[in-house]
Image 1 (cartoon, each protein chain N blue to C red):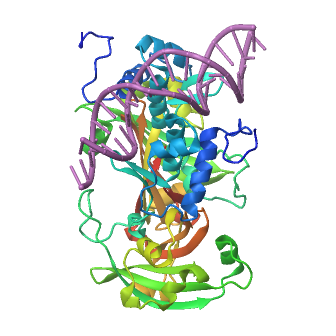
Image 2 (tube, rainbow over the protein chains, first blue to last red):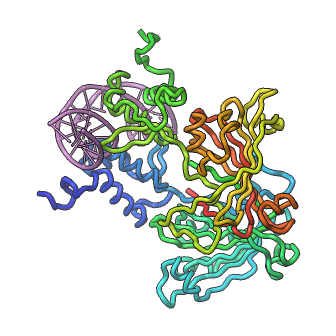
Length: 251
Length: 251
DNA sequence: AAGTGGTCTAGACCACTCT
DNA sequence: GAGTGGTCTAGACCACTTG
């Protein structure tokens, strides 16, 4: 009676809560439990799984720690809506009005310079986990803060998935990309990794940012990941190095 | 029978595990439970506190999450020794041999350029939480990687506490400062915050790093905190911006 | 008032480490 | 084998949110 599906065998070295978490993670990734909605209550999950409440709670805690779930006391447990405030602005301090923790982040205005499907470089295909022959949507845009261009961005988005953005009118684009990915393409971004480096701007990039050629710039290369942990966005952002300011916490 | 000391009153809105964690945090901060040593076993802590094992474990988990404790299955629960690998090198990629995750970090050689007690600036005194008239030890040093100077550092350390370093022979200084703080001054660094910005080097700093004046540089301003959460180290580090490379994870 | 997650108990047994 | 932390149970009751 050990291998019957649905029955809890003594487990092959994996704790019961970890196996439960695995199953529930699959439901989230598959969209069986949709983003932003409540999952069944702990009591029901425990009963269904045939485990004690504490065991179910431990499994849920693991998924909360992973960022897939959020608990709200008295209301329920919800599938994450993903990242919203992951703006590149967090790497820079523009203008006279810094926002000393309390005032809302000033949202920039974006203008799309270019948007077209093309073949990714081998390196890009590898990072996006794409098969040979796959296509991506490349988007270039400038982000302005009170009329001043401050960030120059290029995005690469795998194409079957992000097709809705290939045909969406530029005026319909939201300022916050990740909520838009969620609504238009059913892609939830839950994690991102930014690689920062320093360089100088070539003539074209400098012109787009209203700076002199050779101006010092910070380059941010981002990989963003969905619920399943797949890399689904590559992004390169340039900004004036003299506006660069970033706080890194250790531990 | 509610207010008797040692007896567990229903708590004034604070969970029992949170109150236990508070008491144990005090023991750690006070050095009653010394850094690196094991604390009493969970079973004993629970019995002493008059709570169930699960409650004691929840309190311990909170302290582990804070970074004050570390659990080792089968061996015990230990007070943290603090940060060790918080080197400024993590912000840079020097030389031909990158270390692609696996090879040990190449430890640089340091040379102390200056070391002397002085009065901190008002801003420094504020950040270190020092009273008027307090003194700090200022230390300047260059860090070399295979004979090449790569980092220029200035440290400010509050003086009654760091007195041992004021008289310690420069040759006796360790490469890793935080373990040395722990051994020589009984100060455990558990957290640090680094503020990154970009600028150019003045003539003196450029000379110390073997670069041309006006060379692009990354400036790292660090605040480091002890077990009690007090800021006990200020540090400013300069390095060639062209060697700068840093990975920031979101969520 | 009903339903949710959060706290807490008093055990039992398992997995790991060290002697 | 003794001692440690890790898992799990089957409850009870509390705190918060909503209708």
